[in-house]
Image (tube, rainbow, N blue to C red; front, top):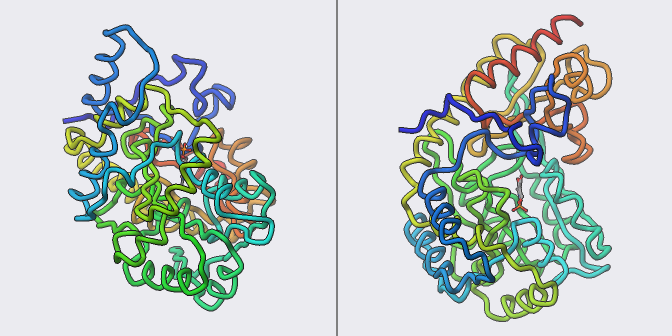
Length: 388
Ligand SMILES: Cc1ncc(COP(=O)(O)O)c(C=O)c1O
């Protein structure tokens, strides 16, 4: 049994971004990594590598990683992937940046559903392409927010793109798209010859025992139009190791993608390879089941706390991820709630605006921490609001 109530002191290393970016009196609830140590099989694999002492060049094929990844897809989703369809990438942001370089042009840009992960908004700068925003429709019932796809707008906008960059499960909204929604998105993209790049980095952080379907698993036809990006980084909290995978069953797409990858010389450092093999081996799955139960408890705590103690604040009920999304537009906070909480509550959340203009007046809060720290953060936020 892992005790997720205990979190190590992350300030021990001054290279730790989450806990060192802001002053020491500020509780960090921003960047998307968790405060928990990685599961033991991963740490054992890394210790083994270090104990050997030789840290020379290594390659993914030598670690049988493509087979390990393919086996995991089959085990989790009954999705049969050929190992040669699996390419190793230096993380997911570089993974989709490579796709954009290979498949977009100044005329055919990248379509994204906003508000969405801030790095999605940077991708256009990689080679100077247009960004096409497709905002969700926001619905509010009581203090609970849900977001839905505006299908007419989706088709109208996505057809202008070279790539539709999907975030599923969605950061920061916590949505797991249904098979029906995924099929409809895929059919529209295929109709207009738009390549789908599906960022599924959060796909194993499932709350309430929810199930996940990879976009490419929907059908063999859809699979031919999808580049799937996955990684152990969020699930097993090894984001600093920068190792991910692009699954590209369509050979023509894969060759084009691989060509760009080779030009960029993006090599994964060897600890990422060792850790990923252990992470996806199945040995960490009992840890993951416990983690997801703990995170579900944290999500419930967050939603209950906001509902009970923060009048006029709205929240989503995330189905996946450890990211909450709160709307302060109906409160007395004047200006950016992110700045307000940093100043008055000594809590650093993520500024809503970085996820798109619809995020103004909202913040993203990271609940991938101990219940005690989550409680502390929320009570600081509440107290700051009570002063208004
Ligand atoms: C949707 C999404 N994609 C990608 C990343 C980052 O991936 P990487 O660090 O592997 O580049 C994150 C991190 O928060 C994310 O939420």
